[in-house]
Image (cartoon, rainbow, N blue to C red; front, side):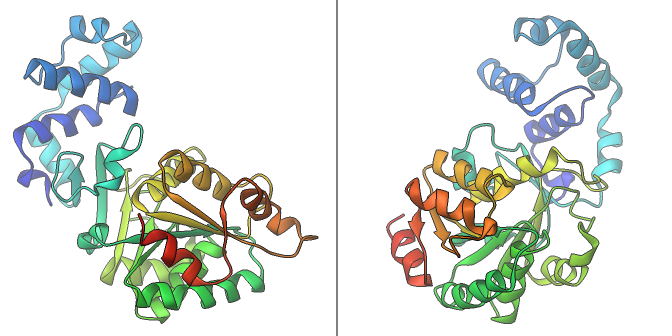
Length: 292
């Protein structure tokens, strides 16, 4: 939806989100206060009472005073978004700690309401990882799962590509604004996904990639999906962070074994030893997710 379709409360929340110096945790602290007080007012006394530091509180308050509804309309006129309070917000994502207040998107928003399975893994993935995607994805697509991943090089791209090739639905969760393709090597996939599938982000249009965006992006992948399947991961990788977040959210975690001498699969083997489901075909995933 567009900004002008939001409720008055949502508009105030969006304005708060754009205040300088504010983070997600502080946003949530203020919004919970608003709900309790049945008012959407930002003043310094309340900010101090909520434990926000004086410097941050002053920055938030000055920004709040400066931003008008006309300014917000102009800034958000071309962006499609949903808020935490929208009926379109994915139910599973509401359950995670500190869920995003806003999701910006391009494409078919209804995909957030069908069963989703995340496939993640190494950026410097092997031919083996591509073949695994080609084996696992078609049965998952046939079982009406949307495949969600992060548009990165390697396994993420393999998962999106295989889904598109098998006429399935796919969701790309990005660590930039939805109007920016990162990495540039994913341009063809990105263009197809935003036209006929779904690209989502918690960052507004124009946001460039930053290192800290990607762990935040991973929590969205783990939060939206019913389960996360890891295909190739080193001992320390973002894919293992996604898997850990999925476990913390009470979701299923699947790991594909590889060669025991390969450093590329050490992370997957560790996940299996820690209790992730050893996955050698799609039925291993479907059987577990049917019980979700």
